[in-house]
Length: 119
Image (cartoon, rainbow, N blue to C red; front, side, top):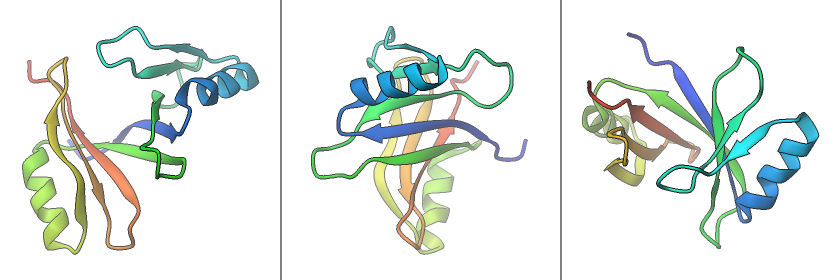
């Protein structure tokens, strides 16, 4: 399968106004019509990968995060730790059946891993 980057997200202190800025700048459509209120982005193009906006904790600075698809979230978490990385948010099941975790690499940069819902 490989491990493709399947999504991006911008985390910001005010995800709503931040999403509005990009929506107006690039004519993107933003929707929060989902169980988590996550602001998904439709860029209006078939090219590229999907993305969205999510609020940061108050003490965090805004940043961009990549989601990388993996077959086994738990195994990837363990391999990350073995290679000198760490866990920011442990594996969690999302409302539609997906699983995700947020990790950091040895340099401190965060990234998320993601497994689609099992069919």
